[in-house]
Amino acid sequence: MPAVFVCGPDNRNLRKRYWRCPSCERITETVVRHGGWWGVDILCCRCGDRWTDGQLRPRPFQRGWRDERRRRHRQLWDAATHGPDPTFEELFPEYAARRPVVDVHLPDDEETP
Ligand SMILES: [Zn+2]
Image 1 (cartoon, rainbow, N blue to C red):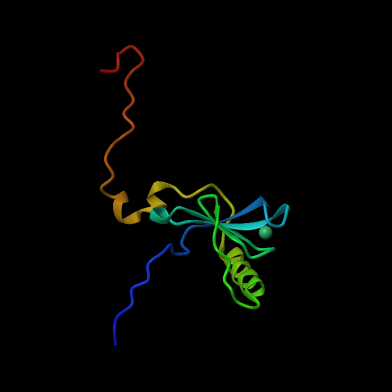
Image 2 (spheres, protein in one colour):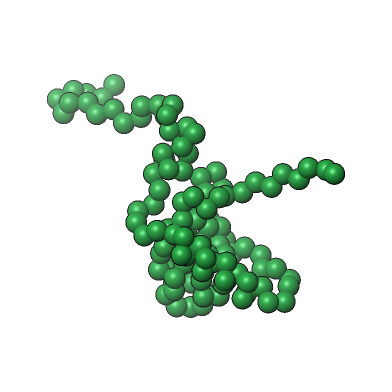
């Protein structure tokens, strides 16, 4: 049996947001999934549509897909948390330990080279 590898964002960094959904045309509950390498997904709990980095994702040609997506997005809403967007350490825990120092603050009286 051939092996199939599927990669994509996981559900570690989910945030609850209220957003004006262009499909619903009203402010509604959405789940924002921060995927690190895969960008940001916005999942509407009202209509089931999904955006990745601002682009509407294709809708499946399948009967009843909206109900299924709404149910799935509502499950993610229940798993999501309020709060700020995830930090670099939360998005990339495997790289956080070896993150280079980028924020070096010099005293006010010194010139930046
Ligand atoms: Zn919507």
